[in-house]
Image (cartoon, rainbow, N blue to C red; front, side):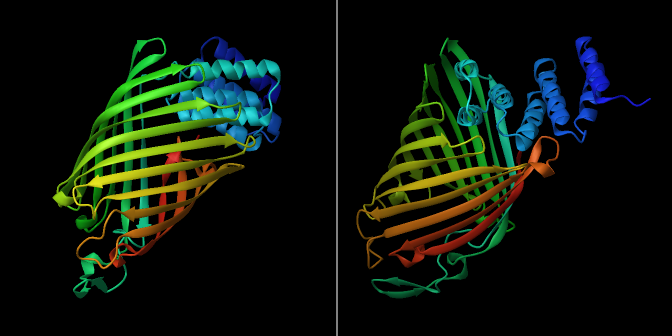
Length: 412
């Protein structure tokens, strides 16, 4: 016997009410294949709500809400539910992005009250969470080195060996992070974080591995959030330790309107270079960023930043600053993100060996696309193309670089 759409909905709802979630899910998923987009949308929404509220399968629910928004990006209620799922999964930045997109789509007054409720509810955060990224990364210049055969110095031109010149390769890019959040009192948590990143090549001499651990309090009130963190980090380049550092940072984040937010962050660290003691330095960073949703499908942001490295040798001491911009646009079941960046760097003094003081202008751009139409379970393919050009007064730092990433990321 063939059931109508109305009968399938009734069957699914009755099964859910008696907690027969296997039958309910099967019926809802059958309805998601209907030719009528309105029926598909309703089935996905009911399925998502059941997965979230009854089964606490927040990742699966987020996928269903994301599929609805791929077809109908202006459905505010669905975007709010997706924001709730992101918050439950601990993805607070993604949750706030969805709330800004919902505001940009236009909301009636009663729904705006729900948005404010969800914004406040972000303070009730997931106690444990993390993420992993895996990608293949072909790169035209894995060591960010010059293509020149020689290096000009005050005592003549040196011939550079092959290891000191630009080298191409295909690496395995691995990134992961995890956190534990311990509630201290309402509006205050102790946040413990660990992160690791590695780019691994067939030639292990170019492997780049970094591990860091941070801990500190986080406070939330009204539309603001203040986070303090402190801890060590370690870096290995090739087969050997390269540097270790210990430092802290403070960041302040605030919603500046229904569609936007700003963030200011500063940090201080002492970095010990294990290969050249003259490069051991104190680092100071300061950045400010602003993000805004232009519509339910489009948004962007800008960042300004400065960096100061005070090394033991003034020739290695430097100051740099720059800006970057990004725009994203959702096209059906794909998201396109483009970025542009520029920075300027100057050393305090000339190193004895080089004829000029180090002065650089660096330009970079990237284009990334997440293809949710090809998702595998909770993961979706990610393709990113990157271009980088560093113009330097010192030949060994002057380079070009083109790279790509082919990996997977969350489908929602």
